[in-house]
Length: 274
Image (tube, rainbow, N blue to C red; front, side, top):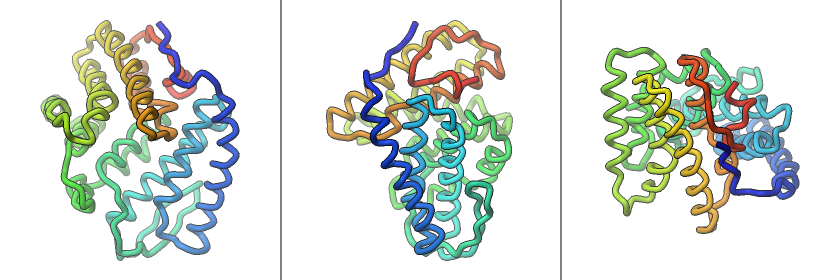
């Protein structure tokens, strides 16, 4: 079954992409020439370019994802090294910088997004680097209260590193996800975006192939529902165009369990999941 996209025409995204690419070029120049610590601007523009190109099926969409993942990983290290000197890699170039001592507004959610992106890319080097990060230390860099995204990151890390406690940690993450209060601003995202990805990973653990496809269909429908709800509330960004979490789970299903995928959608383009 195919789950159609909430956006029925590509003209608007095509028009915006040129602007996004210009902003990305400016962000790169800004990092190099003026403000090395303005990593948030770079990350945001890389996100816009990637999601737009992936939605449009651009041949260099994976290259744009590579830039986005590099920017996400760099932002994590800026937060972890605030006020200190360190190095990061972007577009194959190693950059040495002293991070401004400030709140970089990253969280385990940033780590999770980088994990999903690196999984789609099949990038073991970046996944190894992500799993070397102390997640509790990362969470402590944010002024926001700890939420389910931390236990989600812990579970994803345990999955990748083949930690013996992985099943238990995944169940803990699912429980934390389901316990997000309805009046919490993260509730809809927990229910419609992150929760379904965790469920799909859990079904991979249990090797329930038929159920995986059933929940995949639900996950795609819920991503569409969430996107429409947020757009109707006045929020619109590239993350609604493509689902990195679901794409990563589909890629793992194919690679690790050889599960035949029964559903298609523009939210999980084939060039990202092969």
